[in-house]
Length: 59
Image (tube, rainbow, N blue to C red; front, side):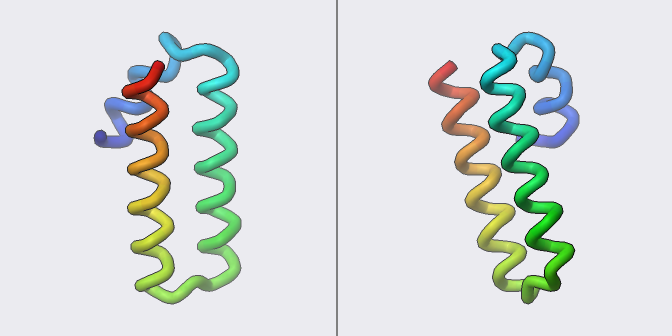
């Protein structure tokens, strides 16, 4: 799912799901800030995408 699609879907999600997505995004930003290696960044991004997709599919 593309970022644009996620942003468009946010208003239709529950507040709880919106907060989960925001928390996941904040975790990614903080981790990147702490200088993860490129491989670690890729793993985190993949996990974030998979987690977000799973949440959206189960909603």
